[in-house]
Image 1 (cartoon, rainbow, N blue to C red):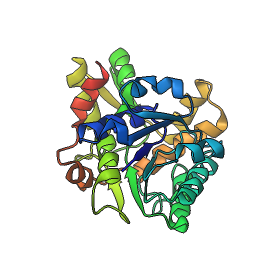
Image 2: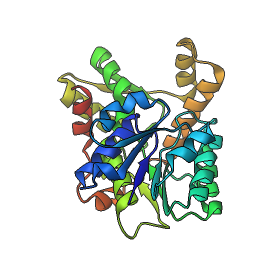
Image 3: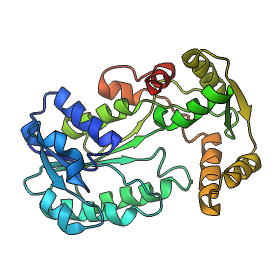
Length: 285
């Protein structure tokens, strides 16, 4: 059995490779794909085959898929500009006869109407239409997404957000990486759509308390309106499109898109997900 992990030079891709090895997969059965293979030379030194794989260059995808049985398609990083690349990987996987495709999607991609979900919803549709046996893993927020908030809290004693009292079921990136690894190699997952999230859905008041513990200083939660958030982003020099995207994302969070914490991820990986305070502490090194 041979497993290809795309975007293997990224934070998530690297952790998936490590999770696969930790679960007993022989490095010789792994293929690490990256747009710039020189960035994953450390994998090659460990006996993992490394290949050039650029979502926007179909010829690199076809070559990377030679001899591959299962593929983890890690979603591209540019919202609104990644669907074509995803389709290229899906089409090439179908042509290559891949027996399982795992895709990292977004929370409630087909049931909640928000901008971040659009590319993922379309990608899930393309995977379904392809007929490739697949597993969809919809990753909720990474605790690492709040690294900048934690840094600002360290400087100012304040964490600010426009999500109100919304709950966010974040987990650490390693938790999602292990979930993807299990979906790729384990039995009984094909045809499933998993909403992966942390075991505990927290509020920003909880975040402030956890940050206080990690930083050793009092941290307060400052509630912003959407207009206040937009004004701050504009003052920081962000363009109107980005401001609208970020404001809309906070509105979706306020609407509950990240609130589900049903334990699916912890059941899949066989352990509790990383608690918020531990995830924040890891960000401080």
